[in-house]
Image (tube, rainbow, N blue to C red; front, side):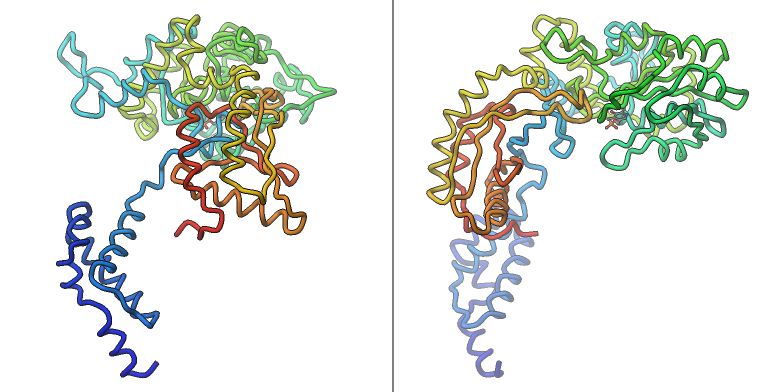
Length: 472
Ligand SMILES: *Cc1c(COP(=O)(O)O)cnc(C)c1O
């Protein structure tokens, strides 16, 4: 481009000051502050200059700047519709939180709370006091503590009892959980030497007996949450393993993973070992997550024998893994719901979603399918189909829950994969992104976890199939 042309282009654009004085700039300055608007206006002008013929008046430039600022101000951690069919979806934040827990967290956020302060005696108290009683009551444990997540709980237990010592684990339980939680690696970082016993499919009591020696700090049993080894298998029952460990004066820790507090069979789901059952089978320590089947915020619980919990609490790592007042408040409120099992299903969103009646989901799919069809137009075929939801987060991995989905298939046979990808991308660009799953050339929107249908329909009106990709 020649210099005169570029000068001419510049003359067709307003000066920064003129843009800032324009009518359209005033609301932008009120919303985002003057300095952010100045920067955005400069950037908008520079971009316009770079693509002649550049003509825009001051109001137009101000509008561009305001649009950019609004986009940049949108939270990256906004709500999405989880239509994946996986209820406890780790990448979508796992358990939805109960209303009472949301209220509890919100109210402690605003100011000072007696987090580590004993109001009776007027002196320093303990953070764990807010949950200890509840956890002991609900699980039958002698003592309890809470840390950042279950990975932290396992790390802390290993580091407390098996630092520079051996931790004995069955080869059938050396699990990897999504997101780089590999039991052997956690052990190494905890400073424990892993002693593997048995084989992938069979581990006997005598294998443990031979492996436990003077250097053993801990026997660890791990619930293989995200897979099942089926067929010719043997695993040592917890009670037998506990008896052996105690005979050798070594504690037994049981990593339950999901760790449910109630028997899920009463809600029509498969039975999963409860925390009380693990303790009743004489495990000395049980670790489990707060945001899996329990239905609370992210956390890791360690419950069990008083003497062992005291040792855990003396470990300096505990301080690095602790949880804040928000989560403590939400966890306590969530746990309190378990005191009333009769109303748990209706109050705990996780349980409500997991037990949502199929007929209810099907009816929702039939109601919403016409809205989806209308939003997508004639290039797609839309129908209601049966499908299977998953619990997710490794809980009851082989069980699927009968569910219903809106299935969307591109009409054109050519470039079907690309059309599905573009459709999924357009749904992710919605004001409230909708996340489904693609299965055999069909996009499935599983409606199990959708409870606000009105919001979903309103949101669909913003669907833009030809739109550009979300800016980075
Ligand atoms: C999920 C899981 C973990 C990790 O728990 P987080 O709360 O995600 O840190 C550890 N062990 C088992 C068996 C699990 O299922």
